[in-house]
Length: 163
Image 1 (cartoon, rainbow, N blue to C red):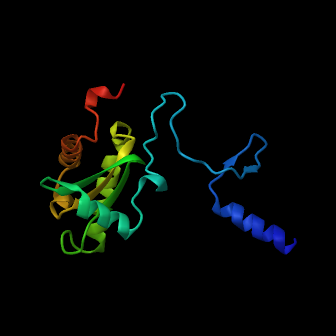
Image 2 (image 1 turned 45 degrees about the horizontal axis):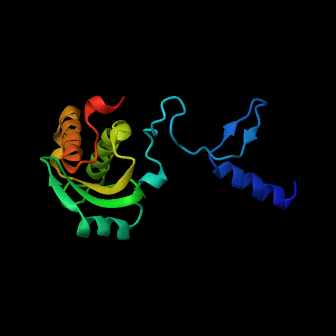
Image 3 (image 1 turned 180 degrees about the vertical axis):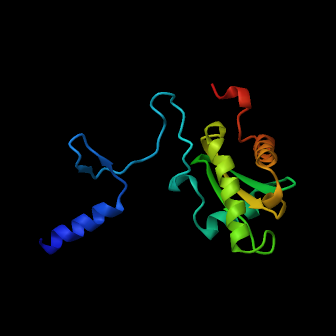
């Protein structure tokens, strides 16, 4: 095997892929998009839907509007014409050690992911900041609070508007 083919094989191994009908790897990347059957966007929070660097988080925190809940804060920043993106913060001082921080972020991320089809597709950047209360709150309480904060911010469609 030549060196060039080893490099290409290694590059293909890193890409998301599917299998063709013949069972061979199809190197085209799998990109989440609108469901062809419903026309709604996927529940998947792909990389393009996440705030990725500190400049983006700081922009939301300095220019955004704060909505306060018992278990979390939501800061939203209008970004007309851009995809809606989200970030999650759980600080050591506010939540606790690494295990608790990861659990708080994971719980909030999953709750939002399940409601993502009802969130405005464009125009917002938002940051959820978990508090220690997010660790002990029931799933239902957290979900209700996330929905309430998003509705207060005008980002989430009403439950009956999913259609």
